[in-house]
Length: 144
Image (cartoon, rainbow, N blue to C red; front, side, top):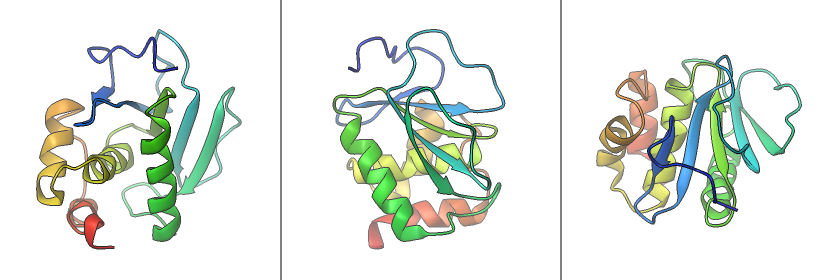
């Protein structure tokens, strides 16, 4: 199912395991290419229905997830499903919450927590993970 995700394409990050995950801002048009088969929406309000399977993680803009146990569960599911599915993480703008989620996926995939923000900024977007508390959340993610 991962066919069609272009690692050189907009917003697709290659994790150390080789799994591909696309980050996206929902306020931007859907990128060209195949649709995701699974998505985790990181939003303060319930997202509109998607044409593919999706989960909603309540996560207000510039903040942290409301339920951190649920965040770990959904991010673990996203990483596991990225082995066979086209997985997307998406928030409103595609940088802060999405970047934080991608950095947490990188930690789950073996990147040391203190290097995960730099990894995502290098491989996804230089402005990913926007706030100091989002950076601390990633740095402490493996300790939870």
